[in-house]
Each structure stands twice: as structure tokens, then as C-alpha cells.
Length: 173
Image (cartoon, rainbow, N blue to C red; front, side, top):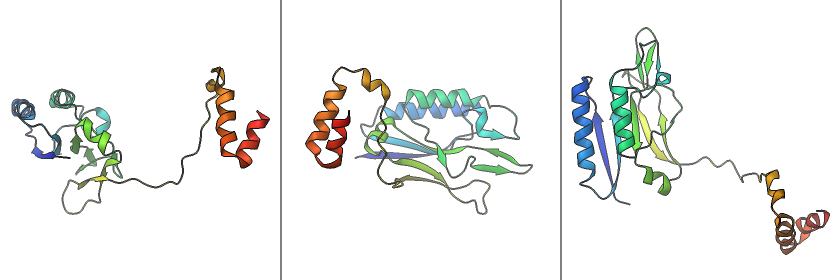
């Protein structure tokens, strides 16, 4: 899969932010491969991404508009809630990876993980494609399936073909 990773440092100035979003959107049409935009966005997407700070910046709306136009996905950040730690316990989620929607079809376990903070006021964010093996998924039966006319017949057919204990359970239905 061909891909482009664009590393950004988004300016704090709203007109410069708008210019960057327009420039990146214009670049998007020039490439046929999928892309990921990652870096320091200097803006939060919603109020839950800040603590002990004043509201949303004006650039939040522009940032969300860019993400929607480019069909990017803001993956949840695992391991940490915030990426910037400032004095007076001010915290924000400014750093992120935004993969294009098509990545999630090919890489079903794509995730971003917040790593331990060291000397910087920002944490490192790792983009990884890994899953946790929790073992086999439990089967969940939905009662609404009984409303289907062929439900009982289908269960009896499948279980009888399997034989053994499961086949005997079909008889009890």
C-alpha cells in the first residue's frame, strides 16, 4: 500500500492555520495514494481535550472542517488522555495522527498510543498496527433472530452438520 506521511506543526495564528489547511487540502488532490497527517496541531477538537484551560480556540472549527473534507479519522489516544502538560496542571491533546479512512479498512488494528513523557512538555505519540489477543470472541445470540422464519431451521441444519454435542443441542430446540 503506497502512503504519504505528512508531519505538521500547525501555527498558533488563525489566518496561518487556515492557509495551512487550504494548502494541505490542495496537495491532497495531487496524490493517488493514501495519506496520514500527524504532528502538533496546536488546537483541540473539543472541550474534553483540555483541562484547566479556557474553552476552545477559534482554530478548532477550521481543524475539524479540514479533517472532514480530507476524510481523515481522529483515532482515540490509548494510554494517555492529553499530549501537552503545562504548569498549573494545564493539559491539552494537541498531538495526533489522522489517517485517511481507507487505512482503517486495510489496517484494522491501527491505533495511536501515548507514551511516557520525558523532558519535553509533549508526550510521544506512537502510531501502531497491533491488536491484543483476548482469545476467541464469545458468541452472542440476539433474541430478535427468533423472529426470522428460518431461524430454527438454520440452527438445526448448522448444528446437525457439526455433529457431537452441538448437534444434540439442536434437537432440544
